[in-house]
Length: 207
Image (cartoon, rainbow, N blue to C red; front, side, top):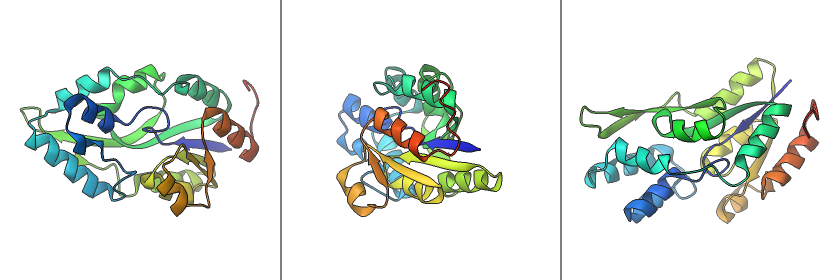
């Protein structure tokens, strides 16, 4: 019995904050967990930037509404869901993810929540739990599932380490250098091949 756990941004959809940086011209929004491993530090920086530049949740949601999944992501996810149980583990927020989840066919997503004031300003965020990706995999293990996982960045490493098999998907070179124990997959076909090779129970129903 196996579950495939995937990161969201950088694996199935573009980086939301990078797109927001492009639309607003505020380059500091481009920083992601590829650049700042400490997620709390990164989010505190983002909230400060939003408020200092008077951007509200609605401004971010408008940008997200214009985005599309990465090329090939929907067909890869459709194949994956036809052959494995799939859970997306992300450090994004439900308030951000919904438009893109719709475009991906509403896969199961575990992530976090934002806190906004009455004016729509983002004032805080609520983590589902500390080390949420790692703890989710650990919980699936307690349910006797074998876990295959893929992610692209620093905040995925604990998930990959906890999984039975972990893969880096199109990661930056600094992550590759720091974590050479994980096989690098450079596209959906390569990731598909590695998942099949690593599976104990691949059905092949829609290969």
